[in-house]
Image (cartoon, rainbow, N blue to C red; front, side):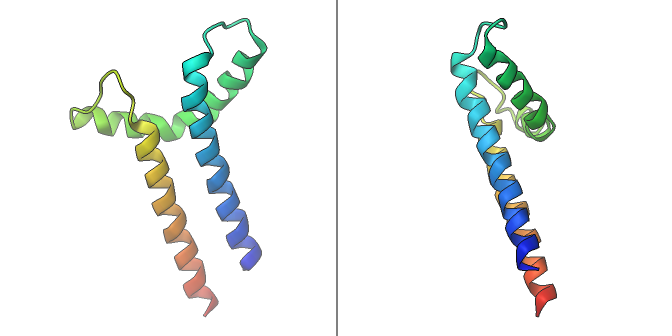
Amino acid sequence: MIILMNAINTFFQILVYLILGRAILSWFVRNPYSGLYKVYSAIIQITDPILSPCRNLLTRFGMGGTIDFSPILAIIGLSVINSIIINILRMLMF
């Protein structure tokens, strides 16, 4: 069970790092012919299913603008989901 909890924590950590990487790379990657753009494009494909609902939620509340706060909301949401899953697994252990 501990191995499963570690795997879940690692999975969510990787997602958070990918979201942070996407946010940082969005400032620098502009040339679609660069090698870095391929990495950036892959990160976009992985993180878009997480960020799009967050972006839509923020837009509904009038917070969609020039600064994209969806990565912050996604990271908070992933943290909450991770904590819930880990707590459920801990309860099942005892």
